[in-house]
Image 1: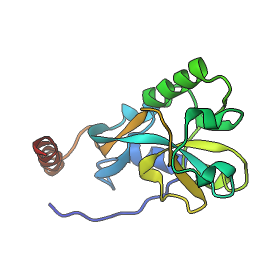
Image 2: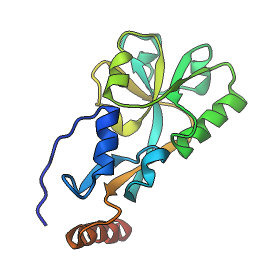
Image 3: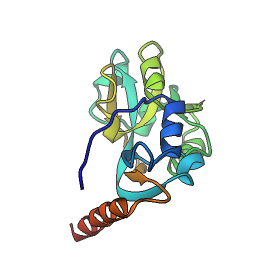
Image 4: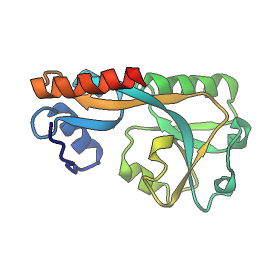
Length: 178
């Protein structure tokens, strides 16, 4: 097996096209699982779960915290992926709506680097995954005292080549052995 790193655009439309064309130009992606609407377009091998955190602009008063309590978010605007994008994020949304109505939730239609860049100029806080903590230099990723996470792993074609099948199986066997 020969691996080659291939860059691709990270805007929402390019990401959708990349998922739809897995097995053609790109065989496998390592990352967070795609939104529910795209999960049927590819095969998935979960390798772990990334805690959901808050992405906070560096100049925001909460940016100095090591960890947040949910109550720290009271009276704040919290940007979260729209309902139906992810069952895991929907579970967080439901928890906040039912138990912490003091937090103002604002829907994000999509989530990509352009969305992260927009938080440089607004006073909002965005739900993000811990593994994205270095994705944008002006956002600080801070854990919150909740137990919500999202899956990450391999995304690959629904109809993988034999080589790709062996690669995925090797990863699966080694994952379960550890």
